[in-house]
Amino acid sequence: MRFGGKLVFLAAFISAGAVAQTASPEVRKFIRFDQPLIALADVTVIDGTGAPAREHRTVILKNGRIEAITDAAQAPPAGAHVIDLAGRSVMPGLVGMHNHLMYTASINMDEDDKIPPPGFFVTELAFSAPRMYLAAGVTTMRTTGSIEPYTDLNIRRMIDAQQIPGPHIDVTGPYLEGRDSFFPQLALMEETGQVRKTVAFWAGQGMTSFKAYMNISAPVLGAAIDEAHKHGTKVTGHLCAVDWRQAAALGIDNLEHGPIFTDSEFVSNRKKDVCPSGAAIAASWESRDLASEPVQALIRDLVARKVAVTSTLPVFESFVATRPLLSRRQMAMMSSESLRSHLAARAAAATAPERAAKAEAALKKEMAFELAFVRAGGLLLAGPDPTGNGGVLPGFGDQRELQLLVEAGFTPVEAIRIATANGARYLGRLDRIGTIEPGKQADIVVLKGDPSRRIADVENVEIVFKDGVGYDPAKLNASVRGMVGIR
Image (cartoon, rainbow, N blue to C red; front, side, top):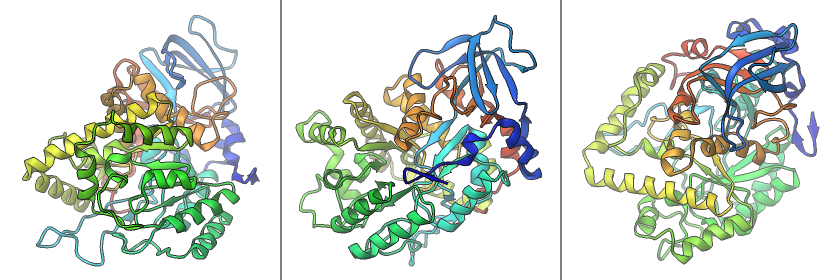
C-alpha cells in the first residue's frame, strides 16, 4: 500500500507472533525466538540517539514492538520469554544507505591489466546478499542503484511475504546514467523526456528512490530530480560530470561516497557535462586544504540545502594496499573466482607503493571531510557499497563502516547513530525505526561485548531481531558460505 507517495511496508505493522506463523519453512529454520512477549534481560542499551550507553537494562519486546526499557533489577512481565544476556549489548538494527543486491564477481583484467570491452560487470546476489545483511544486523537497507530492478523488487516482495529471510528493503530504481558508461549493464539517458518517463515508470513499479550516475548531464539530472519529487521519491547521486555544487543547486537529496573521490568541482579546465578522469579528481583534492574557503563554502551549501552525504569508507579502503586483507571468515563467504580476483587486485596495488600512499592519504582526507561536514550540521549516512575490487562484502562491510567512522574521529555512539538513526531520518521512518525506544519496531541487534566502548564489537552479532523475531546470524551466514559472487 502507499501513503503520501511512499511505500509503507506491511511487515512494520505485523506482530512477531503473526510473522512467525506466516513464515515459510525457508525462513523458519533461521528463527531462534518468535514469542509474542520477550525480555532481553540485563543488557547494555546503546539506543542510537547518540546518548551514552545504559548498563543493566531489560528491553521488553511485545508483538513486534519495543514495549519498555526497564532496570534489570525489575522483574520482567508475567509470561515473558526471558533471555539472559548479561555481558551483551543491544543497539538498533543498522540502516544501510549504500547497499546493493549485487557484487563485483570478477574484475576480468586482460594481459595489459586493463578491463577489456565491453566493460565492468557485476553479478546479482539475490540469494546470498539478503541473508548476509540480516546476519550482520542490517534490518533496513537501501539498494542505492539496481542492476536487475525487477529482481530487487521481487526480493523485497518475497522478504515482506516471509518467503525468504532478509532486511526491509527500500529499492532504488535503475541507474540514471549518461554516455560512455564504464558499466555496460546501465541504460543510456541523454534526453530529459526519456529520463522523466523512466523515473515515472519505475516510481509506479514501487521504487522508493533513484540514483544518478557519473556521466549524467546537468539538464537530465535536473529533470530526473524534478520528476522524482513529483512522485514523492528522492534522488541520490554518484556523480562526476555534474559536480556537487551543481547537483545541490538542482535539488538533489543525497550525494554518495564523499567529495574526495567524486566531486569534480575543482578540476581545472573541466568540460561541461563531461566526467573527468578519476586521477584528475584525485589530483584536484590532493593538496586542497579542507579548512580553505572553497571547501568550507561547499560544506555550508550542502548543509543549507539539506543535502545528505553517504559515507562509504569500506569501498575506498579496499583499494589501499597497506590496509588489512579480508578476514578468513569473510574469505570463506566468497566464491573461489571472486576471492582470486580480489586478491589479484590487491597484489597488483601492492606493487605500486606511491599509489598506495596516495590512496591512504585520500581515504584519510575523506574521513576528515565527513567529520567536518557533521560538525557543521550536515546529515551523514552510512553504507559499505559492496562493489569496487570485490573487497567489500554485504553485511560485513556495514560493520566495517562503523569502525572506519570511529577511525575518522567520531565517537562509537556517534558512529552508531550515523548508521542507524540518521538513515531512518533520511528515509522518513525515524518514528518507527533507527533507535531503541518504546513504541518503535523491535529491530534490535544483540552483540557480545560493548561497541560503545570498543567499536570492533559490532562484529560480534549473536541475535538479530527484525519486527520482534530473533534470527540466528551464524546459520544465515553458513547457508551462503562460498556463494558471494555466484548467487
